[in-house]
Image (cartoon, rainbow, N blue to C red; front, side, top):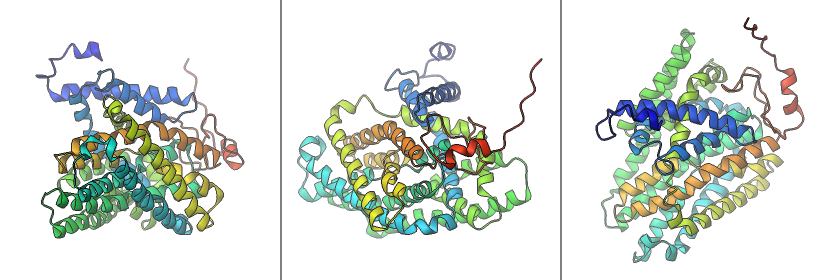
Amino acid sequence: LRAAKGFIPDEASQPAVAGAALAFGFVMLCALFAGRLVEKIGMPRLTGYLVAGLVAGPYALGLLTEQMVTALRLVEGTAVCLIALTAGGELNFEKVRPLMKVVRSMTIWAVVVGAIALSLVVFALTPLLPFMQGMPIALRVAVSVVIGVTLASQSPAVVIALLEETRSDGPLSQTMLALVVISDLLVIVLFAMASAAAKVLSGGDADPTSTVLAIAWELLGSMGIGLLVGILMGVYLRNVKGGRALFVLVVCLVVAEVGRRLHLDPLIVMLAAGVFIENVTSIEASELIHDIESAALPVYLIFFAVAGAIIRIDLLPAVAIPTAILIVARSVVFWWGARRAGRVTNAPDTVTKYTWLGLLPQAGLALALALIVKRTFPEFGAEAAVLILSVAGVNQLITPIFLRRALLKSGEAGKRAAHDFSPEHPEASDVPPGSEASGPAKNVRASAPRPPPAPENP
């Protein structure tokens, strides 16, 4: 990449397209090979994508400049839409309905109670947070709640990516998927209310009526537009058999760009569309997801690599102690809340034991909320955003390893239907290397139909 950059003008005068195109190819190849490399030692490919971006990013080796990373973030909206469509397509009401009691209980005990507990921890850490020094007590409480709610966010993108990578299906997988999706919607609402209160206390303008209307439009409006998108996609996919992958990618791109301008949440829009396609239309969402997997792989590679590239490792030492305390506190409250909810609702042992690990990863939503904090509170937002991004960055890198291991230990790895396959692993429903799954999960390889051998090249 260093050599290639020498053939184009310096960054100040070069066309943005040139740098973006160069970075796109470099990041895609690096992330692809890093993912395959770390998989050989039993780690999730997702971790390889993140590490590739982190190492090559502007805050490590500097192979990618900030301008390049900003240009590559154009892929982010499309990736989020694809991930949301996949999540919606996996949320089958018939499968999830028996688990809703568990999901509801875990949402309360793990996420809501977790947000409260994290807010208290942030407030207790005030002496270690310079930006909170000198604040009135009421404002300090409000800012602590804003940060606590933000840290309670999860990452459906990471959970879905690992469910796809391990080909997992069962009560644990379905519970995790439903829980992280519902929890993130709840976090969005709680954050909007907390930030509005903090804005009033900090002396800014925040009209409660306009705040409520904005939240209603973002949630209900996004759901309504999502149902419309689902109807249009259903009509097209039912009548046109070819070019599904390209059509879906175009729809995701349009929703991401138009939705952002209309103050809609693309995640909710495509989630609603996927749920509609899976539960209302006659189209098999799993077949649709199968059709778009190969086309979506480059988008996912760039998305997660860029997520790694924007981690500010240069700022971690300044907030190392508060970051470490908050990471531990977040893990403990999620572990306690999920296990309590599982015991109260008599959930299956695997659900009670492992679901909390699905709440640990953070990615897109935490980043988006941190940027909103930075923009909304110019007096202290930048420093608060550094703390949030430090916690999210560490969780983003480390927690997928534990989540993948939990999916393998649960025995649900490799239990997807035989027609599903991973773009990098075309063998049907293979259990990943090093899997500790037992029983039927280990026998999927033998029962799944094998493709005919490719003819030898003379």
